[in-house]
Image (cartoon, rainbow, N blue to C red; front, side, top):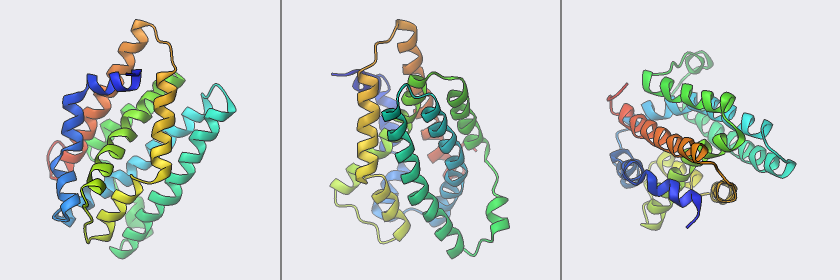
Amino acid sequence: MGLSEDLKQGVAERWQQVVGHQFIAELGEGTLDPAVFNVYFDQDYLFLRDWMILLSMCAAKSPDFDSARQIVAFLHLGLGGEEGLFQKAFRERGMSTDDVESLEYLSTSQSYSGYLRTQAYEGTFLDVVATLLAVEWPYLDWATALDGDGKHPKNQYYQTWIDIHTSPGMDQFVEWLRRTVDASTLAPAQLKKMQSIFENVLKYEVQFFDMAYGGAR
């Protein structure tokens, strides 16, 4: 068992809280209240900016060109897929450019975004890789599980959200992040830091889903 799997097992309870969250179950069944999804969706749009910073700083801190290419390719994939989906949804909801630009962080997403920015600017390359892995891997996990269980909600945005997170690009990037972590040699203090990153990211992910229902805002 590699280091990435050890990190996952170290947050097993938190991990299950994310992948088994009510939000995910209702998304897969197609019973998720659109108002709940819209809160999540709007905040995730703001989150995308911080995700972009995280990836950009990871590329800047890369030890070699191959690593930088992997990261930049995923950034391009995300901006081409997710960001386009956001704009399409905002138009269909009748939101103007000013409406979109006026979206504000709720306190939960602001705290999460602040944590990501701290890791992006102050963390080492491996710190940022661990942060990205903790963000992306649970999404691949729950989306793959929904798809494997034959969950195909009629709501186009719910289905597209599953499709985005089960795409080959998503799977390949998570595998690259895992290989990078598994190949690292860490001192005890570094390993403790990486485990802390997993714990904090998963904690924020649970709060992010709760926030969509009006909790922990």
